[in-house]
Image (cartoon, rainbow, N blue to C red; front, side, top):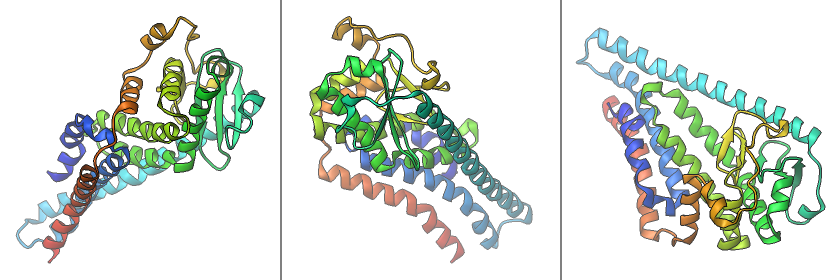
Length: 306
């Protein structure tokens, strides 16, 4: 019961609490704890059933099968998600290295390796891993003035420095371990948004909110591989290095035309740039809630075993 609630209805309700986006770090902690608590609750069914002296034998067998199945799903999900991400990132990195070039306009700004792809649509993303890269298109360099380019590069550096890829991978493993009918797509969407908001906060400290907001609008029509992290919201199963990952040119029709292509996630991120951070009291309450959710199934199991 608890595992099902934490995997399905609970995340759907949480996804509607947009006020918590003003504390993106604490919100991510809550999401991770809720997801992990659902898995822990499912795994705890078996030892609780074995320790019980009132359950019939068939119920204990069902509990063992339930927890064993959950453990198998988590292990398989971890293997499948991790293998896919690393394989696709390695393949895409090889394409970027083969087709990308260096550009003097990024010298001194990136703090790492930057590769530029010959594509007209403004797009920016980063490839985490052992050899980290920031990837831009020529359209990005043409569309963004120096202050906006600095904001975008600061955004990508924040992703790489904080290892946001590991945060998303952990959540994806738990998300895919849950049976498909119980998965909350809203939860995955919210976690991805929070990761981008965290990178936006870091970029805002470097370049200010106005250049960053303008850069987000300019990049709104771009897309990046779903195994990468980027300032653009769109993802694709194709490869930017193949020329198929991004849509048509954003053009130069002015801010109104450019903003028409912005996704709802971009609009949410731009609104958050102007909103004040959450109060310390709310942050502490969110962390306390995360700790409570995660420790509850452990405490219930301890009572059952005691």
